[in-house]
Length: 246
Image (cartoon, rainbow, N blue to C red; front, side, top):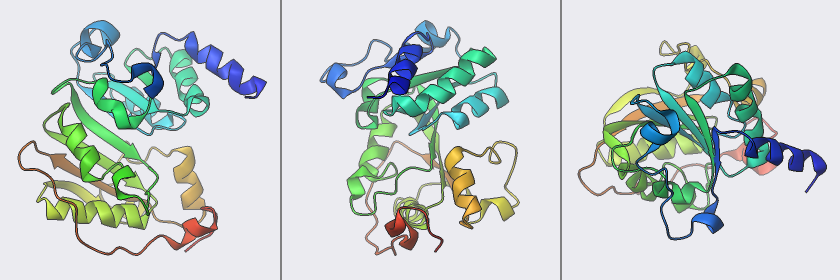
């Protein structure tokens, strides 16, 4: 590991608003903050919102700035990336933002029933060959159900047409309530200050002429979820290392 990465990890370890607990540390036990984020971490009763796969954390920080009456936690396993957002939050003195470095596959070990109001999924890997690894796959949604409030909101922002169409079909198959939906966000009437926030990756895709897609829907806690039985065309540009236009 480079000296730069080691320095960033050391800096993050000094921040009170950063929790580091990857899979090998948690294993089969729940984290002590599960059910206690309001009381022990944020020390208020404001709604809690997650950004899963937060990358550099710019969206988490921007959301916290836009909504001082809500709490935000950015989640990712890549600590070297997360360092940027955690440092920004520290320098800005934001008290309603935290970062959790862990594997999303064990996210239910950190949050209790009805502890989370909304989830943001910003530019997740579409995992075109592995359905169970998609962050909008039904196995993940079933896990989110365990800690989301009734009819909690899922926000998906993506460059991937495959991810967008797959999630749209999953929502349709399970008759989930759609709140907003567009395959061209920046030319859509639903664009607002929050949706205008651009991450590092979003700027990359837009510079390459790729439309940004956005879909938000409510996740109820009723019937078991079903995977859509459809064939979806894969994103051609990803076979070029995510560097070429379609």
